[in-house]
Amino acid sequence: MGRFDGRVAIVTGGGLGIGGATARRLAGDGAMVLIADIDEHAGETNATQIRDAGGDAAFIRTDVASGSDLQAMVSAAVGRWGRLDILVQNAYGVATGHQEALGSAVDVEEAAWDRGMAVLTKALYLGAKYAVPEMEKNGAGSIVNLASVHGP
Image (tube, rainbow, N blue to C red; front, side):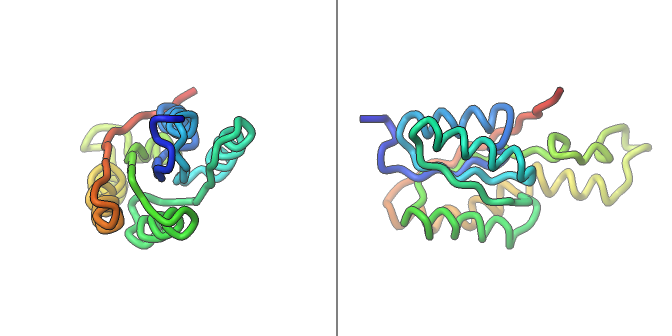
């Protein structure tokens, strides 16, 4: 019996790096895992790797700066597995090709700054906004906020 048997987890930025490893670890410990990532290839590849190892995983393309994408992400997990217990908010914009947000305040355009802030902070609010009501139905839940950068 695994530590997370019967639990449903979502991992944003779950295609690669720490997010990818977190998704695999949760699945290895029995969780059903929804990988939410803007990188479709990485997300699908990691979900396939989990399933090939005997786990239960799915992928949904998600831009964490989009409220409608985060709402759809939570709905997808609940629709597939009937509940949500764990949300790992790991996505980080630079890791998904948004290098325009790198640089000093003099160099970064305002729109790139706004996008970076939406990915790093607004996403945490939106994730909780849509996940908490589903977790309350179970009487409990866990939200873990972190950010990692997967690089070459």
